[in-house]
Length: 85
Picture (cartoon, rainbow, N blue to C red):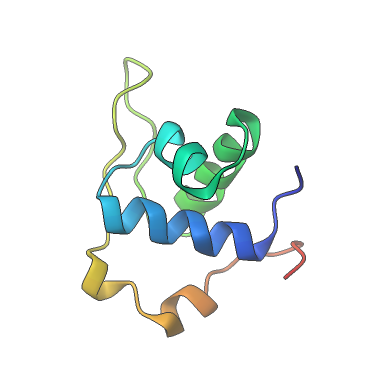
């Protein structure tokens, strides 16, 4: 599945609202495969929404925003370059 700006916004909402920075959360809530969810997590890290991966692998990433901080304007302003809307 192709990563789109729309999927990144959905993934951001899923991670922030659940306060669970994991590929599994994205895959389950956004209903995408594991590979696509991992690519979405990479985009969220680049946008500063989640922190870097932790060692050992599989631990939850830090979520850097609260649900109140994730406004529509912030979602629309996600710096996602090269992606279709």
